Amino acid sequence: MKPEEEPDIPEAEEDLSVDTRPPKKEEIIMAINLLRNHKAPSKDRLNAKLFKADAVTTAEIFQPLFSTIWDTRKIPDDWNQGIVIIKIPKMLPLFFVRIIFLPLLFPLALV
Image 1 (cartoon, one colour):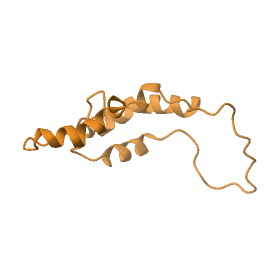
Image 2 (spheres, helix red, strand yellow; image 1 turned 30 degrees about the vertical axis):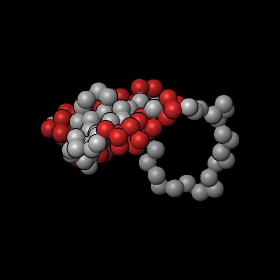
Image 3 (tube, rainbow, N blue to C red; image 1 turned 135 degrees about the horizontal axis):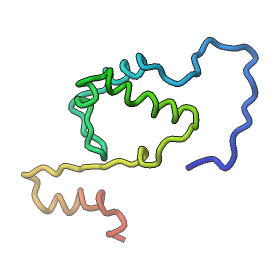
């Protein structure tokens, strides 16, 4: 949900030594190397191992994108979407699936 108008934030009384420029290539490489392996990929099916395979090239590709996002202050809408997967154990009786998992998956269907 986006605010209807920009907040009025007063200027700071003293400047802090904070770098407010777009992320540098080295910072992007460091962030790529901090990604956790064995996590489910997002909707685009790209996982951390793919990015880590060549972090330098990945950073070179991402840097213009991140700079544009930084300058425009707008994140692509599809970055806010994801997939939720619920794994149901094989040995669970069907009775428990109906009672426990179906209300979680389809809460409005029970009304």
